[in-house]
Length: 284
Length: 251
Image 1 (cartoon, rainbow over the protein chains, first blue to last red):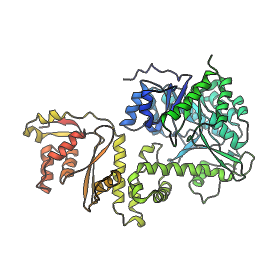
Image 2 (image 1 turned 90 degrees about the vertical axis):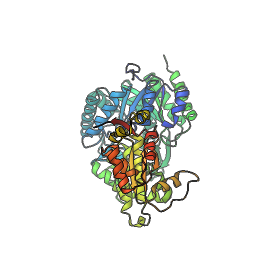
Image 3 (image 1 turned 120 degrees about the vertical axis):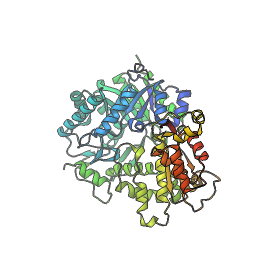
Image 4 (image 1 turned 120 degrees about the horizontal axis):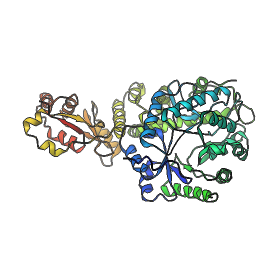
């Protein structure tokens, strides 16, 4: 039913995180949106509306499957059942891209429904590369690994994050997903330069860029504590960081994420149009 | 100063535990309340999942009471897989063993109904049988018939008026529930699961069919218990609900 040769790659154009309440609007007029990203775990049921909508969208748009539950950074082994589910989904849908997170969410067979942080050490590096190899062997394709939003740091870490991600990419052959909102959030929370982070990042390995909205709080010392909420519009400094990144990396697929307090379609499409304008600046 | 994931998870699920040593801010000071971001993310996202999964329970108890219950539930039963569509399977049993809810004896069955509606939403698709095919059979053939059900179909039996309770809390101008036992048939004719009240005997009839009894022997089982049982109404419900997926005229 699906023509698997339609979408080999994500276009270097704006995409949005797909929300079922936008289905009719997207079919009627996607505006500047050229591709869609879905959360893998929402499409692992046996049937019904979610899968019917997905089959419909796959005929019209390039799709990115974004996993939020594999727990690549977990100390324990990857869940073989979940690997099988990912293989099945990627197999029948044949998306243009598959990505997951530098994070963990499962421990002792409990799933914590959040992207939890990990120390950057030689031990965690080896384990993560093993997990990525296992995943890539299972689904038969390269994955992209996304940088996290950090609220704290580990005393035991011996790598900085851009170098850690570059080394994972080098050893496992995975690509990278660069979330510039996460860079901005982590840089604010941990006191480093977001531009310096981009300068150090392996931009040639980046297959996709994310950006989204964040909330503002403060820590025990009154210092700003930004929280990656995907629940509001993207702030200007994050758009500026996107421009800064694209100027170095050249055009990339750029995704706007909005997962909580999801707005009406025109609001989200407007964010995508802004990403489109940013990409126009660097189109060859 | 190593923070194993065992320690991280036990501290993140229990706000009374100290933040693990070895977690820092950007200036090498203890992370302090920064750790609470993870505590909040987990508790808030799972609580929100419970509200979405059990809207009628939430309405019956009030959102604040539901928050409190969800907080206890998510610590007793964190998700066992990343498929949040399945989260909350233990909630009916959890409600049943809460002494402070013992006076609301119907809550566990209402939660079962909400769970089954969600399962039906995600159940595998099936090709329904053509109703015309069924009406083309003569009565003898009809009595010999065995049927298979679409995966979304489910019969729920309760000693409480759970259909009335569900309807009263989801539909405007629905009548107040009376105190009587009720059986519910869930079908998914299109993409949205529909619960319907079954007449007396119909649950016995459908459950027998699901156990591969023929139309005839299922009918006998139901009418022995309820002599007035008439299969016209439940058969129409099954056909209109696209509940039958295969016919098998076994001899």
